[in-house]
Length: 245
Image (cartoon, rainbow, N blue to C red; front, side, top):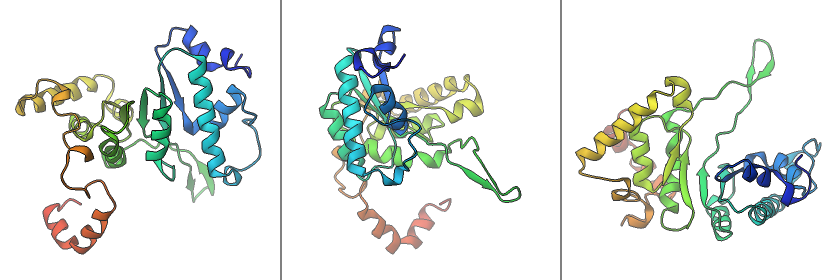
């Protein structure tokens, strides 16, 4: 069904089924490459470690171009955080006309049961501390790309959503909190956002989107690694100011 021609590939199938957009998941690269026909089999025994990094990037860009060329509906990309330079990858894809970037995909990781001496794969639900990376890249990318930014991973509450919008996200994805608290919890998240907005006299999300982004801050180090040195040198003060750290 998937074939090796983009005009009959998965993107076209999705489009014909009435889907409003195509979401490419780069963490499933091998599967997508096989589907679109770039000559890399899903059962290829070659370890990922042996695949050259730049070659892998070139393949992903080639996939994106083929999908973009074969569908008329908007295309978004869900990215893994494990790129040497995520900002550069997003920039390249943005120039190709990608309409949205989901940052970041949460990959299922294996664990080991030491009693049974065997591997197992737990659910790996996220927690609120996991959203820092998504927040950082929303803040760095706001105003620098044309595509929309969707923050994902570790977003559990209305407060978390507000943080992402302040950093520069256009929207968010929530999963773990829905599994834990059920679908009804979305109403609570929305109510918490509305309550916060009312307390700040905001009438719409655009009123504060990107307010604390890298573009709108005078401090050039907030989203940079340079702050790391400052934190180390002033760790006593940090622990006093944030005792829960």
